[in-house]
Image 1 (cartoon, rainbow, N blue to C red):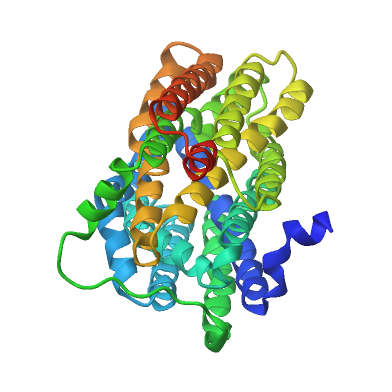
Image 2: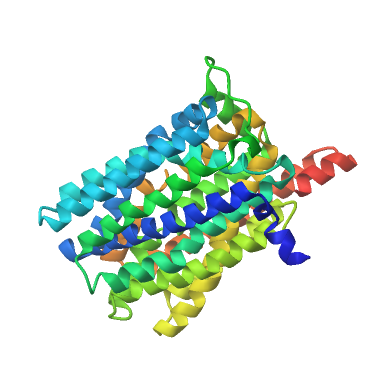
Length: 413
């Protein structure tokens, strides 16, 4: 019964087809992300440069993400996702070709990361908005959490595969491998049964769509608190591609351990996503609890004296992080009007991925000039403080409002 509850969205054929394609494609994406971090670090030896490459990749999300969400709300999300996935496949193949030709350098990596970021800024709200169309409205929380499980679950395989293959073949072939992997998700988008979709109504043209979405969040105390806490923690506590690479190299003298650490974090992420998927209603208590788990376990991981201990502690880091992300998605989607979901998904992506240009370079600077441990530890402390402040704000909001039964239920959610 519990198992069927966790995977209840998979009774839909469309959901099964889509998630299979997403999993295979996203394994390739993690192969490329890991290989890119390793390549930049091999060229320069600095975590700061790795942070800058992430800045280039996610800066377009910060600048274009909200507008891209409005575009997704006004167009067929499936068709838009096909276009963006093909564009990202082309970026991977070009990067692979340049690397295999021996022409790759830091400016080229930064430029192609920027190109990937532009495509990703439009893909994120389109693809995530399409996920919601795969199921009936009462299963949105479940399908959103399963989407997070698939996205994070690919991190179990992708980084470890990249770490192993990078010692066997030229890193350029890893980028080519990612380019080919996009055929899986494009195939799933093309072959879904469109008669069995549940499309949301398209937003009307005109008006001020981004401002409307921002006004909707600011006008709801619960959503406002969730978004602020989510943004702060996303900026500073999720820069694993920078901090774990430096920790693996300096604390354990095994740069190859970077991929394994990401993989074990991915195992925890799958668990955290599935914990959320089994819930029919996600509360802010759960949201803050998972953020706290992320902070506590992150501190322990940062100062783990042995690699085996770090591998064990990376699991609760993944649990807390993925459950925190999927809880935010579920809370927002449960509150969102149908024609505003793309914009709110985009704002969530701006908060999570768009904050990377701020947090990743800072994390790199701390790793290079303070210590590898503090590059992870400072973000964990910020996570704990943000959750504590958010919880106090939630309690104050609860006490300041009239306590009708319906109001009490809403605030406890």
